Length: 232
Image (tube, rainbow, N blue to C red; front, side, top):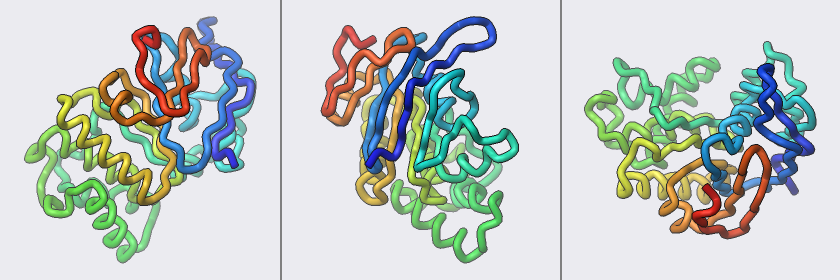
C-alpha cells in the first residue's frame, strides 16, 4: 500500500521556470528514501510540495489519502501536524532549553501537559539526549543541536519525516550519528523518511532506496542504491 502517491506532477513557477516535469512516484509506509540530484534538479521544489509550501501546477500529491495540493491555505496546518520537517539549519529557540525547544512543538497545538512531558522525554530518549534536557542550544555541539531539531520534528509522532540536507553542516562522524538516529526512528516508530542529501558517503553506507532527479525529471530509482558520479 502506497503511503505517498505523486501522480503526473508538474511544477511551473510564475517566472516561467519549470522545476518538475511529469513526476510519478510511489512511496510505501515505513520506507526510508534518499532524494539526490545536482543543483536545479527539483529536490527543493519536491520537498516544498510535500509539506505544502508550494502546490503542483498539474497532477496530484496524495499523502495518507489526503490530496495535499487541494488543501486550502487556511487549512495547511492540518497537513503540517501530520508530518515532521528537519532542515539543514537547526532553527532552535536560543533562549529555551533542549526540553523547552521540543515541548514547544506540542504546546503550540494545545496538547495536554502530561502528554507534552511524556512525549518530549520519549523523543529526546530516541535521539539520545535525555541527559541534556536542561542544556541550552549554545551548550551543544552541532550534531546535538540537530538531534534536538529531530526530536522536535518527531515529538508528535508524525507518519512522515522530511529531512532537507540534515547533515549539511556536520562533519562525517557527526553526520553518521544523525543517520543512525534517523534509522532508529524509522525502525522503532515505523516513520516514513524522505531525505535530500549531497553526501555520497551517507547514501552509499545506508543502502536505502535512492531517487535521482535531474533537470526536474525522475531519471533513476534504485531499491538499494549507491550514489553514482553521474547522479549529480
